[in-house]
Amino acid sequence: MSNDSDDLLEIGLVTKSHGLRGEVVVKLLSNLVEQRTSSGSKFFINNKPYKLEKAKEHSGKWLFKFDGINSREKAQSLSGSKLMAEPIEVANVLMLHNLIGCKVIDQMGTDRGVVESIVQNPVSDLLELESGALIPINFISDSDDSVIKVNAPDGLFLVNEA
Image 1 (cartoon, rainbow, N blue to C red):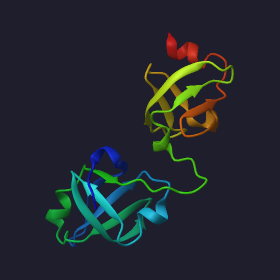
Image 2 (cartoon, helix red, strand yellow; image 1 turned 135 degrees about the vertical axis):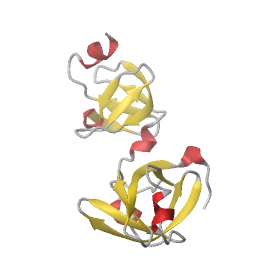
Image 3 (tube, rainbow, N blue to C red; image 1 turned 90 degrees about the vertical axis):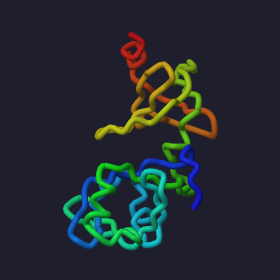
């Protein structure tokens, strides 16, 4: 399991310990739930590797048990930490992390800049451009390896440019 932190994605947050045997409560941010919660999945917490022993859904969140974390004290030491993992590629699925670095072109053919990051938002994740402009991902009409086409409503870029 390599740890080039530039290649890792934030896929969750360890919120607190649970019980006495080393389980932690995880707020999972990934839409690849089945792959991320399978036994043997590999994660990084504070740049240290962890292997998932088991996971189960619990009250809208997840309980994770990592190999080597066998006490409440060890589990508590992970509280508040980001859960990082290597990207998982899925055929014919738009993976948000692949959009970073792509050029954004609107429906009029105007170059709007390059995607700098993805901002999580409850309604729709947002593409954040170098200019600071924010574009909901549901406005994406097409994408390839280097260009994202968006169908943005009138005024979106005026608001962002003001």
